[in-house]
Amino acid sequence: MTDAALTVTNVGKSYREYGSEWRRFGMWFGLRSSRIKEHWVLRNINFVVRRGEAVGIVGQNGAGKSTLLKIVTGTLGATEGGVTASGRIAAILELGMGFNPDLTGRQNVEHSAGLMGFSRSQIQMLLPEIEAFAEIGAYFDEPMRTYSSGMQMRVAFSLATAMRPDVLIVDEALSVGDAYFVHKCFKRIRQFREEGTTLLIVSHDKGAIQALCDRAVMLEKGQLIADASPQEVMDLYNALIAEKENGSIRQVSAADGQTATTSGTGEATVERIWLQDDQGRSLEYVGVGDPVDLVIRVRVNAPIEQLVIGYMIRDRLGQAMFGTNTSYAEQVIENANPGDEFELHARFAMNLGVGSYSVSVALSSTETHLVDNFEWRDLALIFTVANTQRAPFVGSTWVPPQVTIDCNGQNMSLESASDAQGGPRLVTGR
Image (tube, rainbow, N blue to C red):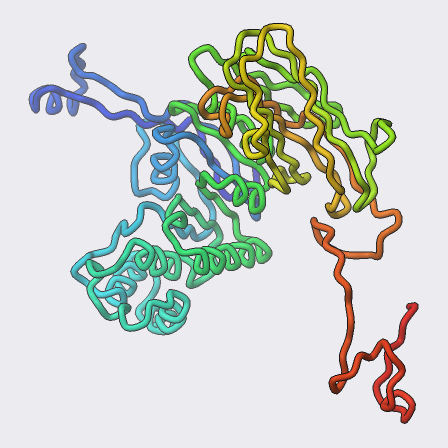
């Protein structure tokens, strides 16, 4: 594939327990022994990242994400398969990786930049910008052992992105940064993306994956089990986290072609979900600001001591717009019996921007579905918001203001002396 920035082909990584140095020595000469234990942390990993594409890598702890990134960057060798990359790769992997704690931040930058292939003149040219972006002040000339984890991340990210790379690889290091610097990092990442940089990012932050990535891949126990849109993969990831011993996960195609994920143990299930107006008529299209009633009908299939019904409204990228549940509303259902049916009515004004939205539903015993997941259903309902009668606006939320303009202490909506004398005037009705 000519437009491929990264090609991962049949990559596998195993670690061996030899039990003795003699067996290790024998392996060098091709000798085999049944006493040598082999543990595969990655197996049969295949995917392609195109130039300019952003791909998220998700998975639970121990799935093999960090091992895969080390193989992609060349800091760890694969047992089988290989990776083909084009262009310059910059990577932020384990926090502090490659830094000497006894050297200052400046010295570590100079040393690491040299290992990255920069010339001495390039390093001296980039140093002021790296120092300025990191914003750690006098600590830049202090030993790194005095740094907090957030300060180490600032220096690592500033160094890795001092020059726009062809491929930028980011592990979960950004999770230790303060909110201000994380926003600053994502702003630079978005800028690089607009300029054509390929992005490979590992994160547990669903919002970051869905906002930055074109698609996502998911690892589970060293295997690649999903390669699809960010929303579809993150829905599956969420379902796997919630899966219990007797739980199940199902994925079916929705009417609009998206893949809907459902998981849970089945003690309670969603029978139907719909939107209706104040006259009880079902809605597929809703006007901005119009009053609506979200109705969720639930059937109980087994005795349940506590039943909590929750919902989340998401935008077309799967990012959360609003969510709540009956635990927050202090309306938990107790001692539900098989055959009982309940209808939740959530009445609110549709103060969302124009676009397509979906509703996810959760049935659990507490405010979180990670305790008892009776049913979690993504894309349970899809609806569209249109602006038919409100003033034009931009954004995902409708928060109409009352706008007034003052000039020289006077409200310009009233006829003023300055207006009569040819001064500033307010033009309305455009």
